[in-house]
Image (cartoon, rainbow over all chains, first blue to last red; front, side, top):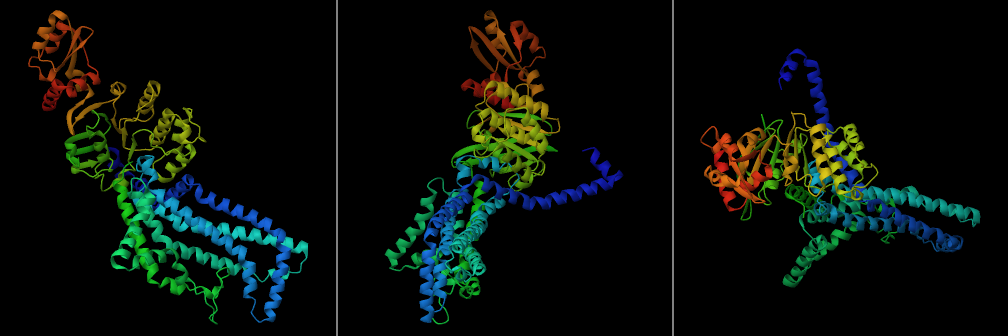
Length: 329
Length: 301
């Protein structure tokens, strides 16, 4: 205490460099705790990536076995393709047939990620209170806002990116495998293989992953809020109140607004983000969605998306506030 | 500047009053023990100091309001709240990485050096460590942080004697440098008798004793009175009296004595010694006569 005023007078240079250092530390400390909070979530919850990798591996094994039948099925598709072209039905159906296993891979991984995200969110702010580790986390200079945002980023950012990365990798392995078999077998169908537009498929996949994360954000954030609030039975607290309200509405007023709203929150993204009818009014098979069927403008301007995001933000704000007061249970 | 300053701190949980107008002042560089029975309000007081609980009254820790500026404050304050709060899934190396990542004042090399003195392996998970080793790890993490205030809430609960001794030795030798302040609550008062610089007793949400250890030694005496002198000893108004194997041990507060040669008078009655914190604790907070004496001691502050 005695030295510092003297320092300022006699030797201002180190003092000011110390100041700038402190400013640097301060600005750095905004993002660093967030980065490390996300990392620690991944350390704790291996299931986030193990589940996806395990399902992808199992799917790949099943796909490998199915490749025994590939030359035959290619012949069938090829025949059907020739017949359809003669019947002027266009190549769309053929592509759907070829794209089927790839689309299933993507859909399966998205479903798994949804389940993992739900399980994760329900435990995120509950587990740390149950095992008393919240006392340790709170002993470090990490704000409740940073903690809650880091936890929310797992289902909203990390899982979608993981789904995309794992699916693309899986699809490429599948593609190389099929190409190798067809080339060795020489069925002549390899040429047809080039018809599958992989780049387009991955763009649609990325779009789908982002759409899902945004549309389902209020679900995850609601679960996070419940996990920070409930002392036990987080799943029941998360599920029963909305269902009960919907039931009461149905019985009391004979309307189903709440019920259809809930259903829409799970599945409504398809209507908002995709236009699954082509220009001739023929419906497009969801196994192969062409770029023209994406409607990002309609999605971004749909009230459902923004109402959901406002609800999600409110849940997160409440969760941050709750965590300040939370103690071990 | 006082490190911790509280005036009229109040906190109620429903009808239970946890803090009932706590006043305390802890100067920089002290090692303060806050001792009290279960449910006396120790943890609530610590939580208030750490910004984990909102309280009525005035509270400043390192010049800041802990409830409003908790995050900023925690760069200068460390705490071990209870034992066994380190996440059980975490590896020792991850704990080091994480604290190094989020704490601007963490000296990783120091933590590693402290851990090197223990049997804690870097690849172990917390759940694989014994309770004593978890505490060693937590203490290594906390001691490697260049903090101004260290708060310890029952840091040695459930540890065996050796670990407890090691804990406080390490704290005094490798951490305490007379500019840092340490605030500790514990039931194992015998462990901290030679560690503390200041002593506080808390009971039913109020501070009933607040003195430095120098004061403690000059102020309180315990006399093992010769059987024939008991009546004379009682006439000198002891705070507390207990029987040990047929001998009476009486505890006196010399500050309450009127004559200056009280100590000599007592020496004539039997063997005079400084009481242990535990004996004073019983005298101040103990059973019914004790709690009366507690009020006297509180009033005498």
